[in-house]
Each structure stands twice: as C-alpha cells, then as structure tokens.
Image 1: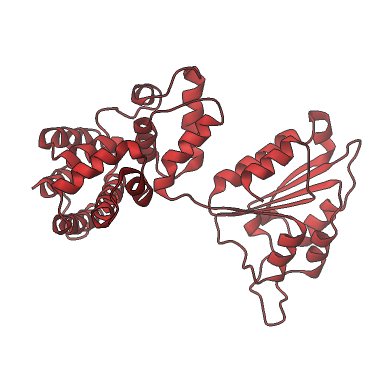
Image 2: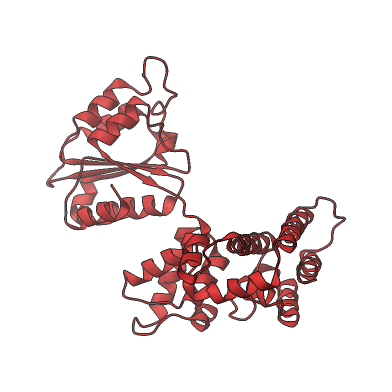
Length: 345
C-alpha cells in the first residue's frame, strides 16, 4: 500500500491487524505509526490497550504473546514496535530451506487476531529480501509499506505537495531555497514547514522573505543565490555570498555547498547534452521546475562542456581539501573563495 492509501484507511477507521513499515526514510514510517498511536484508541482505552516497545528489548515470542491478548473494554488493542530491525530472532539470512524466521511468527501473520493492530517500524536499514518467507508472507497477509528516500531533485515538489495538502502555496524560488538549505531530511523539512504555517496565514503565499524571517535562511546570501550568481557569471555577487559564508560558517557548511554546486552543474551538463531543449522537456529531463529554465539556458551559454568537466574536478579537489586531504589547514572560507574563483575564471 502507498502512504496516502494507508493514511486514508486509518482516517476512515479501516484497520489492518499487521503493519510492517520498512525503509531508509523514517519520515513516512513515523507519520503512520504516530497516527495509529494517537488516533486509533481514545485516552481511556490507551491505558490498558496500547503498548509501545522497542526492538532491542523484545523477542519474537514476546511480540506474539502481546499480540494474542484480547482488548479490555475496547474494540482494539495497539502494539507498536519501534526500531523493529533490532528484534532478536526476527530477521535472518534465508537458507536453502527458506527458513528465515520463527515459524510461530509466520503463523501469527497468516492468522492474526483481528482486534490487534501490530505495527512494526523496521527503519534505517535495507528492506526485507523479497525472496524470504517472511517478506512473502507479509506481502500476502499484512500491510507491507516501503518508505524510500527521495532524491534531492524531488524535494522542491515534495515541499509544494506538503503545503498544498494543507491549503498553502509557496513560490518556486522559495521551495528551491528550502530544498537547497535543508537537504533531504523530510522530518526536518516538515518541522520547518509547520513552523511557517503557524506564522503565515493560508491566504498568503510563502516566499523567500518568510523563510528568512521564520527559518533563518538569508534570502540574499545562500547557496541558491550562489548558484544563480555563478550561472550568470556575476563575479561581484558570487564573491559577496562567499564572503558572507566565510563570516557565517553555519550559514552554509562547505560540504553542503559543494554538494549543491555539484548537483547544479550536473544539471547544466545534462542540459548541454539534450537533443530536445524545449523548456518543458528540458525541465522534465533535468528535474527542475520550468520556472528555472531560463537560468539553465543562460548557464549553457556561459559554460562549455569542457569547462564543466574542469569544474567537476575543482569540486572534487576542494571537497577533499575541506576534509584535510592535501591541505595544511586552510579554513573553509578561504577554500570557498579559491573554488569560486576557479569556477568563474
């Protein structure tokens, strides 16, 4: 099931006996398990019928024992296992006989108690091997959900979608600014978006000024504006931003800045290689909002493929220097000044 489908069912009070939530993106797993924890039972029912355990503290036998109990003065009991990847004896490598988990746990999944909601949060690890008996049984008899990390080019659209579902709007530039600054940590992004919505009425579109005021990202001195300055070969503006970074190291750590620059110039290179450079097609191919295509069209004129290849070499070189390789201790501010000079000249 998809995230939206699971949440829709929960809101409609359509419950399933077993939820196995897995994947390397904790945000969706947390939202689903938190919703179940807060909403399935009322406060009086929770006292006797809701149990939250951690994987490192339980084994399979304990989980089954809890799951087979009947609720007290309630239609349901809820059992949430956080950090389920740490459950003793749950996951083993499949052997030639296919025995990868205790048979009694498989038997419970195949025939669970209908009045129990067992939620297993299997986070921060690889997903179950689909060839194992456990994975096949979960896929057939339970809600099996995979929470995947988003690629960085998908984050601006995720921000727009998150706000749209809550009747808010945001400018393309503001969503890209947040994506560049906050990275791919969806929980962190959601917290910052919630902060914006507390302070801004839904009738007012979120813009860069709001982000500067309520999140603390400078609307003028940030890596998004550095990308724009480099695209236009605006030497003065680029140097002003780099000086700001040098004076405010926490504003944009060098490792973050280099990562964003690498993604930006990768998109320029990809644009250079496109046969069909029409705006909508190019935007789709390189993974940006069509709003920004004028910037990439200009960048393609300012940076040849040969120059772009040199820039990638500079980015790798200064990434290593920032980590102490082949450098005697130059601070990040000076390294950024050198890097930007080489990119522009």
